[in-house]
Amino acid sequence: MTALRFGYGTNGLANHRLDEALEVIAGLGYSGVALTLDHAHLDPYDPGLPRRLAHTRRKLAALGLGVVVETGARYLLDPWHKHAPTLLDPDPARRAHRLDFLTRAVRIAAELDADAVSLWSGVLGPDTPHDQAWDLLADGCATLVETAREAGVRLGFEPEPGMLVSDLAGYERLRHTLGDPETFGLTLDIGHCQCLEAETPAQCVRRAAPWLVNVQIEDMRRGVHDHLEFGEGDVDFPAVLDALSETGYQGIVGVELPRHSHSGPQTALRSLNALRAASTPPWTSKAVDRLRSDPAAITTLFPVAARGGAPAPGDVTRTRLLQTLPARHAELGAILTELYGSGDAAERLAVLRALPVLDAAGHLGPHATPLVEDALRTNDARLVTAAVGPYAARHLGQGQWRQAVLKCVFLGVPLDTVAGLDRRGDPELTRMLAAFAEERAAAGRAVPDDVRERLDAPPTPDALPSHAQIRPA
Image 1 (cartoon, rainbow, N blue to C red):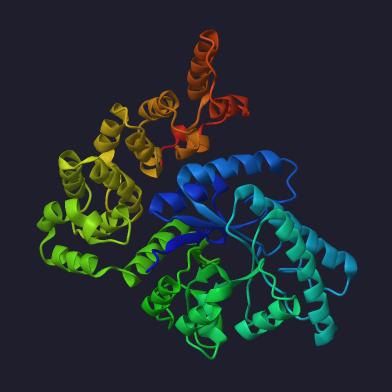
Image 2 (image 1 turned 180 degrees about the vertical axis):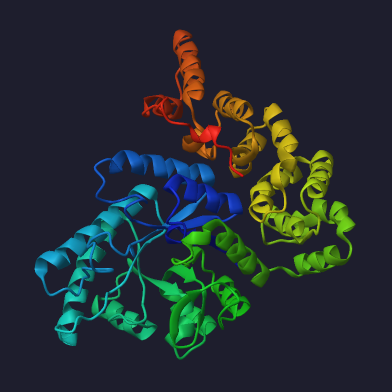
């Protein structure tokens, strides 16, 4: 059985800056991201794209996130018409505009070492004959296949309800028309299968397995193309996840909820919890049931969770157990302190990595900051990296937070792992980093690239209040 890699789509965090969207996704425990190229998220027409791409590649690596490039931005190419133009557009110039965008997406995917580039056909226009539209689509896809092959990137073509290619049969026909190229893989949306395929979503997974390079997942009802949160539709998620695992799928299983940006972090947390609940190993299920009746059992279950909850990673199982506890705020902080204090390095890491999840659920607040402070006093780069995540960005005082950044610099922990760096960075931090760089240069030692980049960034205007001075509630 293959352990699945769950991801979240940035189109469900459209109100976040890209770096902070990635920090939320990683902080909640996802291992991948479906990155929709859009105005605010890695705009492929931004003149500063090369620099931004290099930064995003480092950020993804620092956060341990795999990536799929998505091309479903609604108004990136045409501010008046959703998802226009498409490869079906009879106007050569407009069709070329879409092809140029998709070509840029392939190049971006190559720079990010992405699993795949996801794309779709588009809606058949009222004045375009079906056969002509099919020829236009096949021609555009053939060009993209060659571009992707040269770039070493896989394409994931997505059947989409209401579009020219709406189902698996349409994808199979298109793939055969193109000569069954290896580069032309499949993006399978589980909700779409529930919406319109004759087979169950789990059966669709098994049918699609030979070509599957990307999976999108959400709940949906039969005959209604509406992306719903888990539990609001009719999808049998345990069966779907079992099918993905049994067929050996190794790509990202990305949550696709593009209309939920208004509650992005909370929706992302609920979604990950639902996916993990649907794929819970037997040991974990029994442990969760035991904690519900005997919360004190956490002290005996937590140390053995990594072994008992396999094949899920130990952090995943331990976070699940902590989320089950009825304790809140100071009481939960006390339990975490006990587990952290008595635990080995892996258990301490698990406690630190669970803090953003518990905090996002409203269960914790600032009551675990002493654990972050303790981790920052060590010289263990793993503990320090875990300590400077979203929880520290939210709750550490500004002076402590600046020192945490400096600790990362001295230990060689990449600054891209520090959550909220752009939001909380201030002139005093810049001064501290500059002093560090001067000392290194005077000693004839190299200044880390990420420190140089930070010093070269535009300074925070003194006339404006920094985000660091506006503590989050």
